[in-house]
Image (cartoon, rainbow, N blue to C red):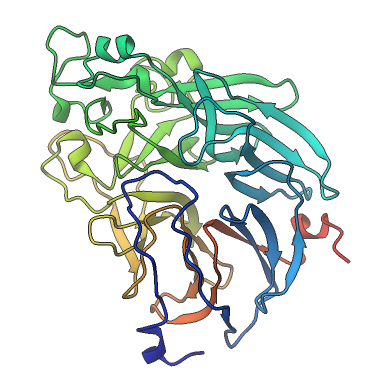
Length: 416
């Protein structure tokens, strides 16, 4: 374990804009420096390095255990399933929509690198991007940018004079390639700009709706969702929305028809946001305090019977990134003029830690937190904030996932 004084200077970062999208740029180059904690656990780390287009497994000695051969660039998320397959979103060829983090091609990849299943969603009007999530029923959740023309955007009171690309969630059945469930942010918009439009209203009175004019990004990528997670017990989807600096919570128990409305589902709110947190300014709520300034990876965890969430807050306002851990109450409460923010249980930062893009945090089996700092590498810290292990590498790291070496996911890779 290194001396704490060393850690005050160990991070030398290129400062990059947190307000931009997740383009493959501003990659930090540092000398290799891997430190080993006192108790090396029998876990492997799966690393997504979008900068080098690599997905690979290492141990804590930083030995390369396994590396996948991919037929296309990473569309960001890739992770192992129990059967040894890699669930990956990759970059489609010649995409029409190519904001940072674009994908368009979802695959299940066997340990021998053959493709077991593929789903292409890339056209002039939509593209899958950033993140994917395998559901307990075997279906796959994906995030989709959907193009809306200038005329369509003006019809819902958008201030700008250009097309926009709001977010859609889809659930794909890999056995049939059918989209069996869908949610559209477009169905739940509000604005206080144009009284002549049907979605005109007082934004703060409707926290379950999305202000179309909150983020006036000139290229039309006004939301830029970048992360998914799922609460199977309560059938809830968590969506990190970078340009709103929020986590949105969506009721997955609705039907697709109900998800277009304000009624239905376990919460009888249809597809309205049943909860949101991190930035009450996004719905003009003066009762809460803003904590997020760009955000990645809404990592839903259960620890000691309590539902929690780890979030990587990029920190574009101060060029200082944080990892936060929140307590998630159930049922969630989202009402006007109320402090709707969750209880903050734990936070971590160090001087000089800043990644304006990508990044995330994962709870390890030993109770420590593994932090992926996009343009730096990996850091393992305990709940006292002591750094126990680190890996400095040049790269552009999306996320890291941890697997015990005896887990089904690793055993089914048939690593010799």
